[in-house]
Image 1 (tube, helix red, strand yellow):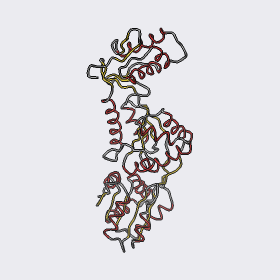
Image 2 (tube, helix red, strand yellow):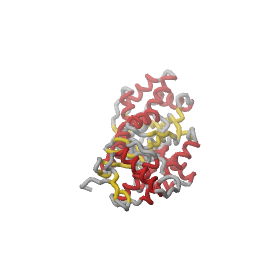
Image 3 (cartoon, rainbow, N blue to C red):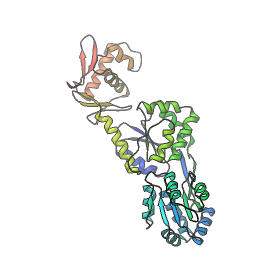
Image 4 (tube, rainbow, N blue to C red):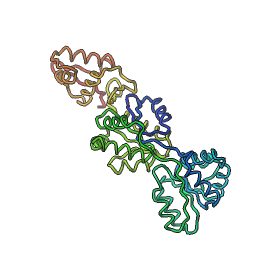
Length: 365
């Protein structure tokens, strides 16, 4: 991912995600769209937990891994963790996706059923099909709210206990968030990574506020900007706005990073085949057979001009036009071409006498 500028919009685990991307060569920027406000010391959560222990549930719905871990940590701070885990273990546990299941297993418990779609709608469909009248159901909510679970289950006759372990708060850096959407629209960013649906909503709302949403959607449509979502639920707000993100098969940060890397590796395989190797010109860097060429911004502009020409001749005047300043001296064009040859090999750019220059493509091209 050398030369790729990747924007991380997450607050939680952003350092881990940024580090993984940086190890693969990306330049990482961070502009959290939202922040998580924990409820470890929330009086309401403690009261709700004590009520649940006094009247144990038949079914427990775990919607997020971080929520379950935070709930148990809050109970532990109040000296109730062992009792809470015991009560949860006696109930039927339903997980909203693999991350929730992982947290359940980490707590020494077992998920009886997992919504592989990672949607509350799938959980609701299961429970309503089975019938919930007379059942006591505890629902651990994520920061975005209940997704209609409480209302629908209660309407079907269930006794619902709601436990909100954390809430989504506003971005900790409004200026950075606003700048990130402007940069995404203007071409300063190559990929934007999302790890939650509320975060995606908030980032798009910031784009609306800055008046750059259309530009972002257009860049995503033509492939210049890549949106990456950790799972299908996170992808929905983007899809609703006409952005089709890449999504890994498994809802894990590692899988998300691998999927993004694979995307750019595929782009690398479609690079131009030159006599000196496969050439790919990105926004801030050019790679020849995967190696970064030591080029200045003006050198990169000239190389992009030659690549866009597809092997056709580019005039000296056209080369001068992409160089800084307003020089008309043919020698300036020759110097720029000479630096390209120094970086990528003498045959990378060919001179066509009295006409100009062209990229040295391989015979297969």
